Length: 287
Length: 287
DNA sequence: GGGGCCCATGGACATCCCCTACGTGCGCGG
DNA sequence: CCGCGCACGTAGGGGATGTCCATGGGCCCC
Image (tube, rainbow over the protein chains, first blue to last red):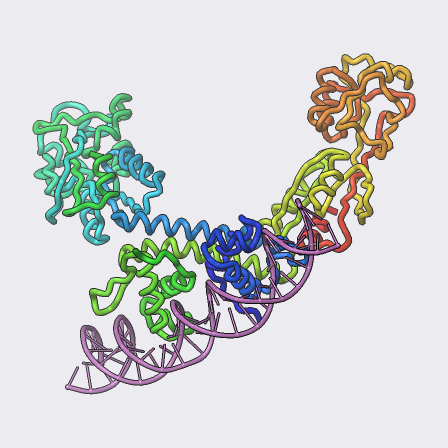
């Protein structure tokens, strides 16, 4: 039976032999004596079970089998080159992984654009981006030991923060909802269904925190919340960016509450002490 | 400076270590003593320039760098597995390459379907399909030492042939062409422009071979020839499959020639003495 | 506290890999 | 036609390399 081990050295020898055409030139390209290449090719053929060079003529050429093996060998060597490139970048200081968790309430385009840019530059860093909502952001940030976080809820752990553009939000209801027209006080609001995302956090300091509505519905994300508002199920805070169209077409209306019908979420970009190069690039691109 | 060599053995050790979790189990999976794995990982770290396992705890785990390297290592090992698979198939008798040249006049679907099927089965054979026309088919067949050929012109070299369904063709002209209406003899045809593909071959035994028209135009393929006919430039033979729609809509008409206005091209599948498995599969699928 | 794992080190040793030296076959030019 | 250059190939030796055995020590769990 054949030996089944294949060595990268053997594949490199095959590649050099195919590229240069002769054993001697291949050996020169690899920086070794030509007998070394002879040995490598011979042991490669031993492992493969068939010849890769045609020795029938007085000058050797690659056999058809050899050319087929060469094609696969180049794949392996290309993968090895990728590994080397990644290793080189890692040695230059790039962090191997970068986990980002962000609040789905913020516009996603700047973040994705920056991530795409990094990926296009073949940075070795594996970037893992995850969307959560409100308090869920910090939960997964600490649970998965993430590096960056874009959160609206101020986190409990100590982190350095970079403020991002504020997100105006409005307290809205469907136009057919009783609260959609006229002016209402807190007592009036309390009689209707308040929609929140994942149990809105007191740290948000929303004006509605004191309402303690008769009934509250906790939804998973703002998309579901918007759908619920559009269905007339209840009322609640929604970011203006999400309902600009709905407001313009009159499908939903701001509630004229005696306290406030507008609020500004202030998302912040949080990171730990000393971000790596990829994290710095991402921070610079977002902030 | 670090050594820059990386060995497949080292990558295999890293992969086994990541998969099993401990040096001892990795060694067992690789069928060697655990010190061998220790050695491989140590020399790998030496080559990389950074640690791949985190030895700070009392149980070792992969470091973040190690996980990143592992991802690239798996790519290399996957490429190696591909190579092994190809080698295994080649040893089982599959030919490394299969060159097919066919006449563009024949319908291409059955051939492409068979090629796609082979490719889907991850056959190691590199399949190279090339379209030519008439005599050009045999030219490239002998020049590129191809294995299979679907030709309409009978080849000069001795090959075993498999007949394929005949391709009816018609002698046609545009409806506004003088030959499109009425009955014409050979002398009448000779006064008009005969369109041919790549200097039609006498071996085709077309009835028009004796015409020796006043002027003949040699085109590169039947697509161009159909376009020339539709433009009213001349008349000539076109396969019915190509002009079925044109005939139905009356854009082109069969020429009522006193000799014949229809012809049957008989394509044949030619191959050399002993086709390999991939060639046999292709022959069976087409014929 | 002891048994069971596991990592780690050191030394021995067989194998492997590469080199030097030399031989052979072929084409080419004087 | 015969040497010369080039390229492939073999033989043998020696140093590097990879693997194993034996041993030690740390930590968890019972």
